[in-house]
Length: 544
Image (cartoon, rainbow, N blue to C red):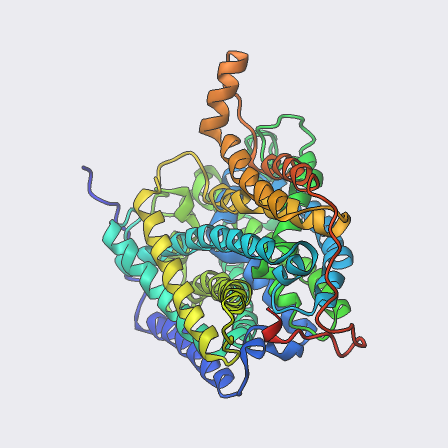
């Protein structure tokens, strides 16, 4: 077995460690300060529905970015082009759909989680099943994100591009434990406040990286654009190519995946995944929640564009020695998925390197803390309270049970991330961005089919909901490269491949068709009537 690759870390000095320690200290302080405010379970999970629109918008961006953006997007643009940005067409379409169709119904339902609406519309068993599917999918997706975050952290702590399993586990535990600690203390308020701080740090580290790369590349911006515009620079032409009109279904980021696949995927992530939807329920009204969602998408485009720019500049820095000349880097690029962390550690001056690495931690924990809180709220409001009601018991509506649930969900995520670390192949053909995007589709397809049935029709039953959720898992499994290639090869004589963005529309339409086969059902009235724009309904915890 060949020895792991080493990178010298002389640049990362005491001042850098002090900056990183200061970041962790700030997170703990925010958790402590938000924990001093007395609250019940609903206040712990929804912040009393009094969170500012701007803060919620920034929190949505911080959550949606994750470590996959921090290390995956520069990897993609360095090896490819700008077509990933075109998927934002689908993001904006999805945001408009969620803002106008989903959020008003969720606020009118007045429940702690969005799955409370499924209870009113399709019954309590459908709610439990949909919530359980969310917990399953979020455990997979956020566990993978936590594992991905551990890879660059190992580069920081141990100086290895190919860390051992034990080192990966240690990094996972460090990142997870800190995120769980401040989330347990402050609930959704701590999540939103820390997300805002973390996003500012992430943007600062991006701008810092771009400025340093422009300084180190010995040609001007105009010449850099000319290099990137070379028709042979990218895999399908210029590296500045933004729109790919190809009809090739194996390409992940075409105009058609943007308009169709990305619309379905982001409608699911924003509308049926409580991880992001929970944030929009913390404002005073559906209108304010919708404004926070729309605003977040504009900010997200800007932040992702910064990461794409970093990847393009890293292409020139590491892969164009003819352009760099005498300024070419002495550290060889060993693994493209580590390119940005490697650059930060080897080329940033002391102090600034610590700030950039703090940005990496911020990207990792910005998605981790919200996932833990969302999973805990769903476990308590959609599983624990209904099951207690069925048994005739009295649900605990204090913040003690939510805090225990947050700790439990944090432990579960850490455990799954460790399991993912044991099986991931760093030399596989799949990029980190593809890996992260594909995981949640297993749960999303069935969940989106169920929600579309509930929102757009009067049909649906407990049986059809259960069948739709099961079909989502089966269909997505059949569309995986290995499985899809096997059965298409058997049918057509040659294996085929389908880009991940097509999994959602295919799976969702099948699940929707199954779910609407259920008999028509009359929805139960909300627990409380809709109030004015500044006083939205809040369902009593005992209603669950």
